[in-house]
Image (cartoon, rainbow, N blue to C red; front, side, top):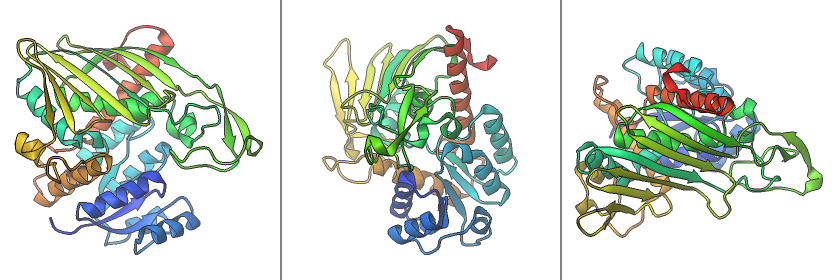
Length: 385
């Protein structure tokens, strides 16, 4: 792959993850931008990035930057992605793509008007090799018609009332939190594997801590509690800690999803089980090296992540031999390889191997349907939102 120059906008947890993944994928990180000059300076020094920018305009004016990775708080995604596209750069945006479907629809139209610029949303969980294998098996008809899908995405990093991060604030992250932050990963993954489109949802959301104790000074995602209660101030919370969603898919299949950021002991656990007419598949992110295959008329199987046992698309996303564990950070490398490989080929009429702005729009529309369903207390048609 030819070396390309990328800039990272955002200097928090995800900024570091993207920087590492880009380098492993063979992409040069030529610059970065944080929320302040101090943050920018500290980030480029810590990451060994050659240049820090004073503004987004300065970054977009740098000819060495061919693509931009947006890893800022959610409220900034729309305006930044729009500016990047209008500047003629490729754009790779963290999810959610924007704060509303009106904003995401605008970005979809803007990207469509620039067909030679690649525009992706970071649904990296697609790129665990065994999820690509599951896709090949389901889309290839090996499990037959999909009857239903069940699963969850649970964490514990916001279990305590003293746990705090900008993501809990509606004005920063959006009216939905647990569902939008982690539930959309599950929704996108199920769509990517099965091709199923949600047509209606019935949701029940819960706020466990209506008031949280905010440290006097922001903290990074997953960094834990800093300071003491004497160093905190109360803040009202309107975003959910837990959500349960029933889903009706077009064609008749059904789905069940529950999400939680207050489940003790679960650090970052996504699980799905796909029930088909001939077989079932289960994958759990806490054990990403194994795909369970359920049988009615024969013994169940566990497929290990070994390139010699996988289909060609899944094998292409394997970086090391079987028995050498791959995990979360590797999905970013593989996602970036897919994105920049697509750019390098230059065939922008081909189907992108990554989540596009249309996929990002779909997830925001689903989130708005979930919100409407919770407020209504019943089923809501997705297309009617």
